[in-house]
Length: 205
Image 1: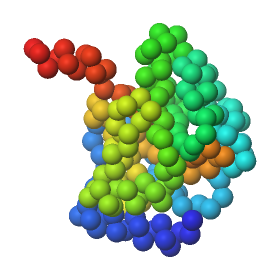
Image 2: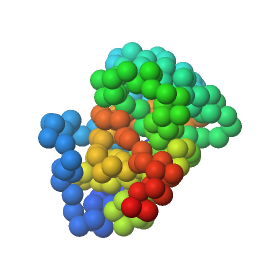
Image 3: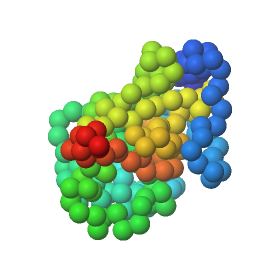
């Protein structure tokens, strides 16, 4: 993907939103510097090469920053699902962004948490920016878990994700292309909303 093309899409999205949105509220922690989007070559993660010939899980296995996430994906059965035919987008929090004792969660809860990080289809930075522009400022992405992640602009070129609790995660590394999709590193673990049964119970109150 050429930088001028991605810059033009980002500029169009920013104009549609009414300019840069600025920092998205919801966290008092310092925001990382905006990542560079639109690179044609895969970036490295923690100094390790990410190869487009590998699968998503094989690239995760090469990253020392994602061994805990990979273990959780395998325990939940989501890593196996991503080996099926098709393309997937994985939003991958690093070890430091994961909740403590993640793998010790019960299987149903862990499966929901992990499936919420995966979106069917290949949404690289260009596709995300296009979807945000066409969506009038946000792109609603349906996850494998069944919930929704919302992608929005945060400034002229940075994309953030808003989970179903309203919390935000910055994309810190874009476009790690893999044989069965694309991976983006995020600085916080997005969380799904309450399960459908719990929501129905809340509605009756």
